[in-house]
Amino acid sequence: MPNMMPTKHPMPSQEPDVRNRNFSEVALGYDAETAIDEAKRCLNCKQKFCVSGCPVRIDIPAFIHEVAEGRFEEAYQIINLSSSLPAVCGRVCPQESQCEGVCVRGKKGEPVAIGRLERFVADWHRAHSAEKPAAPAPNGHKVAVIGSGPSGLTCAGDLAKKGYKVTVFEALHLAGGVLVYGIPEFRLPKSIVQSEIDNLTALGVDVETNVVIGRTITIDELMEQYGFEAVFIGSGAGLPKFMNIPGENLKGVYSANEFLTRINLMKAYQPDSSTPIQHAKKVAVVGGGNVAMDAARCAKRLGADVTIVYRRTEEELPARREEVEHAMEEGIVFRFLESPIAIHGDDQGWVRSITCQKMELGEPDASGRRRPVPIEGAEEETPMDCVIMALGTSPNPLIKTTTKGLETQRWGGIIVEEATGQTSREGVYAGGDAVTGAATVILAMGAGKTAAAAIDDYLSKK
Image 1: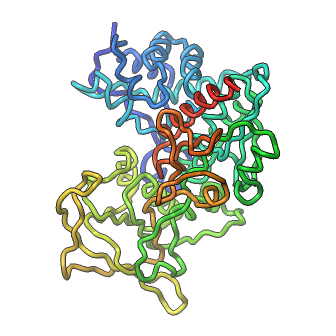
Image 2: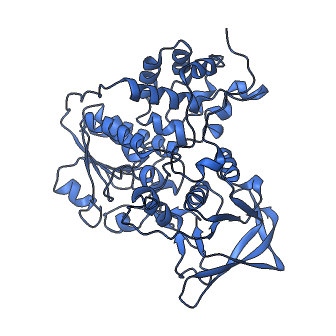
């Protein structure tokens, strides 16, 4: 019998005034009894709307059915057929706008907690199975993957399962891309990312770190000198955007990318870290996306009073609702309908204050959201000693300027065929943020999966 409880089982978590002082994971996860009961809320619909809402097309009703029966390893194997990173997806995917957003149970209550169940299954497997996946027989083809973020890891995993010899090239000293440098430990523990990468290396994937494609070696050289028959570009979008307002060059102004990389990848929050980070008293984070929430919550954990400045209203915030609620619970202040127009410094060149322009909403812009319009004469200066700009990112131009025949958008995104990820260069594919600009982990994974299928089709005909 289905469990007709109208609401999800709540996610156990640390108390807000405890977690905002540590970097341990906020959400604690379901236990087996809770997971089984939540799984029984699934109606196992004949028309699987949830599957169509999943960018990597996990057979969601099938894995949830196994959870409801207490067969957790079987549930994991179903997820593993479609996703190389289930423990990651269960934590950071925006399920509310994807699989859960189209769940039938959501029409008269809350949807089934698909993401929480995926996380439970992946964590259960990691805790109970010491066996690593076996590498398949090689098929004789070599593929290079640039970037070890979600799109690159997904592409590499799908190709490795088919017998391709895959080498992943990562510019940083650790694999994982945005999963390790961008998403904080309290949302996604790095041990989980490493576990997922270990599963890929067990399949035969080689990971080479400290390799900057376009500097250390080029795509042309990979294909012409080193025998790689196809290349997937999953290099992400790591070039930060700024507002070009007075004072952005002051000490104490960070891009969110730099701030988060120092904390997440270099562990600057730890007392023995060799990477410096400013322990500010008053921090302004400019922006309203998930990256802004991550930066603000990290700054809070470093002991600062943190304010998020966003030029629209709470209703227009692009961040996941759960992340916004967590930030508010942790004591972060939101100033809506405001936009910085200047940052002021002291005699030593450090941030002293920020001046914000009051805004009101006008007509919708190209994104469909109402455009913020300045209110003339409505400005306010507020003391701050640190400003973090979380305004989005674009792809680094290094790859496009060092690769023959690679066409890009004016803003830097690589142009691809949507159905295959094929670029203008034969044998070169791309996906994720390098194509779309900053987006979600699961959309990047979907692009990696699409490209892997296309590369397999391309090379199987050679």
